[in-house]
View 1: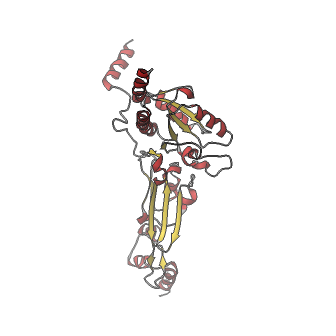
View 2 (view 1 turned 90 degrees about the vertical axis):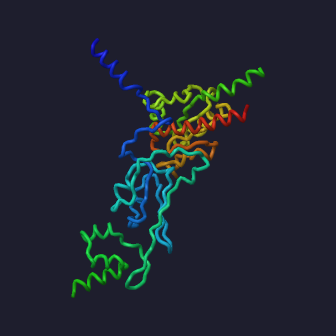
View 3 (view 1 turned 30 degrees about the horizontal axis):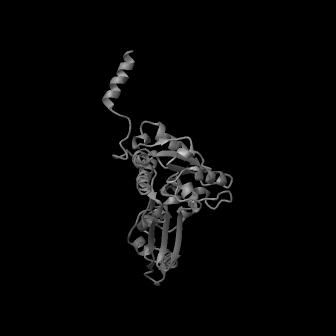
Length: 167
Length: 150
């Protein structure tokens, strides 16, 4: 009897259990897996996210401008494999779940990103840049030499690394 | 009769009835739909809607699943039984695009090949609040449609 009264008093104190949404904010955990966000500045262009994407939501296209990333949120199942396998965490899942949209916007639920090509400081060949996060992983921290290497295309970088070892 | 036809749109605009069609869904989205109705934390009935058991009573139809080849004819027959005007909501990525089942030999979807969809709620499954958000958008469309019909 007394236990029941305690529950009754607690319930009166706490107020209704129903969330106010859509008339107010709904509580969302920070780790909730929602809409995918892409950061072109830290993408290395390994295309691992495209390879592991269960719903086939991620597509890459390459042309003279660089590497174009595209995700269609309407076939993304928010499994988080892309985030898990991304070596530099350029692709992350935000906790934004406000994805309901009218049919007219079905094919505009996409996000683009372009990893621009840069020119080799030695030979001028266009190549996808080696981003600082990747150089950190490869060389365990950076110095002036690794910064100079980052500006070179893979061929020149290989040549420069070998000549450095000889001298 | 004239009085009834005047008053009916005003009444039904406040209380659209929901109907659920499972077009080969894995049941994930259906559990979330049941959650919106049965768990007091979400309580979709605050918006004036209620789930009904017969397609002939429905105003807003919620479709889950990628529309498998086996269920396609039955599903379209069921959809035709829902009286006009109606609002169609695609719940989950499967009816919208096929999701992980896209380009499978067993899938006839996406459903907007066969019937007019009004609102899409992507997710695998969408969380109950996202479904409520989609239903709120559908209710706005429903009120506009009832206004046109009157």
